[in-house]
Image (cartoon, rainbow, N blue to C red):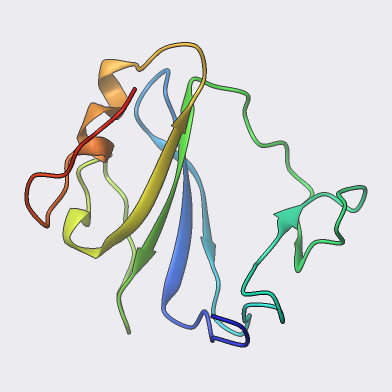
Length: 115
């Protein structure tokens, strides 16, 4: 929703090769723009990013997941970490590595999953 605070949200980038998180980005202090979007990327990205990053986002097969929990001490030991706090996840690349399969399980019951 436009203007919604992202306090308590964390974006985690997962490496499909080994199942480890390679970046954890706390989104405290940021908010959705007037269109209800939040853009993350390098300076050259259009539209202009709300959060400019200086690292490369891996090209896959990998994953990006959004988590939410207020006052959480985030320590990601593997893809099944904090599954109860996972809001959404996208796995991208030409295949689904077994190391990322836990990211597609839903803590909210059976949801249809597409690969």
